[in-house]
Image 1 (cartoon, one colour):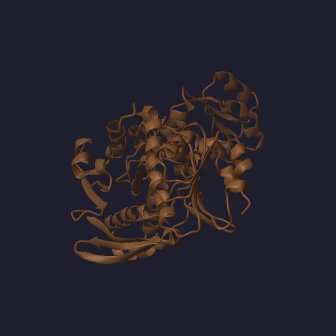
Image 2 (image 1 turned 90 degrees about the vertical axis):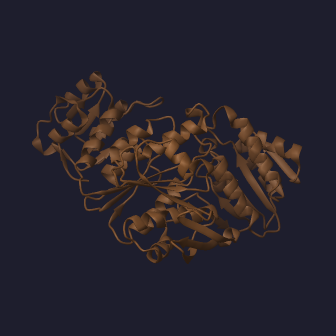
Image 3 (image 1 turned 90 degrees about the horizontal axis):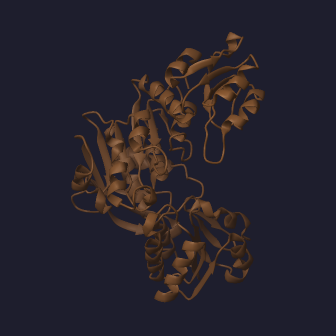
Length: 469
């Protein structure tokens, strides 16, 4: 990031300079942080207050690590830090809003920066990585760290991940129980964007209404200029051109990706080889190209095609884009294949119904002596969570797997559905990870192929760490 001086920070945060350090050498910063464990000596620390943690309590530790610039929202702590004499203390009403406001100022002044945003209920991070591979083949490009896509993750990305000399910034934006999409896009003001899909995830925050969730996602276009373009996956019924226009405001271009004849970027002849990869044909303006991606899952062909479409907006040829997507950085715990005594598909990054079904399809298309699933609760689905888990159970009953192990209260809904529907010979249901681990050796057989997937809150990554493979 560019070095920011004290006056710039005051203007950006709208804060009051409660105390000034005695020495001027502390009057500028080159990084921004909200985690005391990561703070740097020349950093600016925002003391955020959450449901479980009040970061003001970490302020003495921040100072011990050499940080002399802090933004606080509690006057008592402002006074405590002022007493040291070597601290620039900025007092604001709300540290999260102050952090976002500073980000807005910083990005608004970056006038020549090209800006791309990506959102969706699933596939955001993978699509971001495909898009980065394409755009970075021609431009110096910045992107989010991991899935830093929230009201705090976006500012940390802007200040700590975007080098001063980048030409394009790719920002993944996620919504849930935090700030509205309208507030998040104000920070980065994308000129073009991708919506991967609109599924069931985060439904509990949108009155269990898919229409409200769709409207929320489409607010990613609110900062578009007259030439703004939205790229959507036309495979998703609520992302048809008509639906997008009906649930959004403004006049912007729409590019569609899908398998229908009228899609702008059409995917056909999909060959899903399970864990051995996927390939297909991409047709654009009457010309057809061979398309192959280095990650598994047929659904990822459409994520990759969205990245190719974005590349075309920035004058990257389809041939060059298709070559560039082969260089994608594989995201940890997303359809990772682990080979050993068992073949494990580690998709523990998170879970929602659409992603769960897509991962099951990988299992379906992979030959193995026995196939199975270790799956658990999918969270944030709202009032329809039981019905959604029943639907996934029904889907699994038709998938051809030999065994299923479920974890958690909603995982049991999947197990009960399987026992009712049939189609799976072996079904076990457990309440805790400890119970799963205690029984797994008796359930698994050498040569098994299985998927591990559930919402992060269940701590299902422990299974991956501790399984004897």
